[in-house]
Amino acid sequence: MVRLNKIYTRTGDSGSTGLGDGQRRGKDDPRVAAYGAVDEANSAIGLARAAAAGSSDPDLVAIDRVLARVQNDLFDLGADLCMPGERQIGSAKAKRPPLRVSMSQVAALEKAIDELNDDLSPLRSFVLPGGGQAAAALHLARAICRRAERDMVALSRIEGEEVGAPALAYVNRLSDYLFVAARYVNRRGEGDVLWAPGANQGN
Image (cartoon, rainbow, N blue to C red; front, side):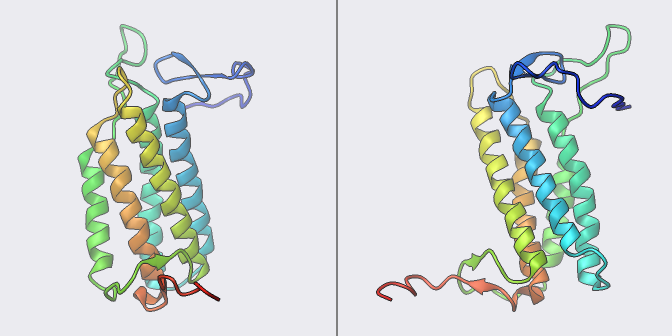
């Protein structure tokens, strides 16, 4: 159980923070940056959900249900990233394995992508991040999600640091879902704003 009785502790005033296993790392440490970017992506998804809040459109309601699950998954991902390696949490008498993102969570995203993509109009060009308010918010969340993925990949390439394959797969698939969801809320792709290469050259 997570219990937060006090919001400020002053332990981070020197520029360090604690990982899940008790290690102290700088707040600019690559692992901290990675789960910080995941938190940003989660916050952007919250904005996207707020942009569609109160809608009676069944498509938006269905997407919101997926996004609610995703926000919880992203806390799982943050917990995964803040616990390096396979260290245990707690005392020797009451150890529990660290929380890890699972491939079942990845599979659930793939199913959600397939369900939306079946009804989308074919792409004729790259899509600009716009359209309706909810779609624009989903595109912003997608871009932040891609940054979180880049930070996680960079972390995984540092000697001695580990990032699980399911965690990397999840964040990659999530950006795909957010792209498809943005198109879907833009009248199932009909309201997409398309890139016109070189359209403004010479003007």
